[in-house]
Length: 143
Image 1 (cartoon, rainbow, N blue to C red):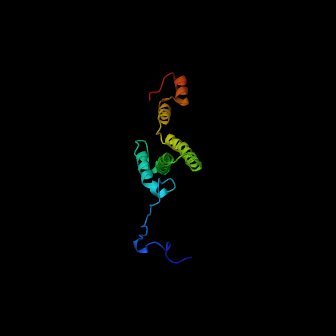
Image 2: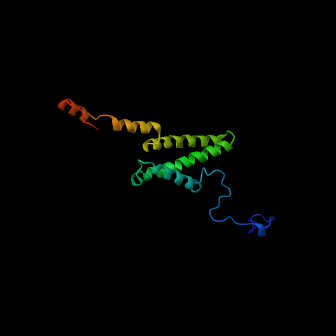
Image 3: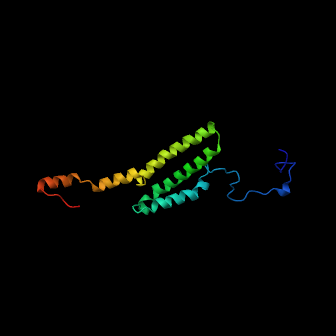
């Protein structure tokens, strides 16, 4: 070890240490939960603002959905900045995995057209008990 100064030919008096929360080397936040957190919270808040969302019951999966979408956005930025290579393939694989999980969570929250159509169909279809009642009593129950 040469001494206390990392670069003995440098000028230690002009060196400025990185402050708290150093993000100098961060490029796209793919590997930083801390840098993705504001966007993740924003997404979770939007999900919980849906009229059918319950802040108590849906909060856990909404808080999972936020980081996944933030990760996908950062992955897209990182992929766009790179040329094809092994590291890019890892980012693409990570993005595809996150996309599958995102779709699954969006469906659970009723945030895709298919999920909303399915939910509406379930609310409007007659149940087996309604069919039996109609056959037994010869009338149809009003909804």
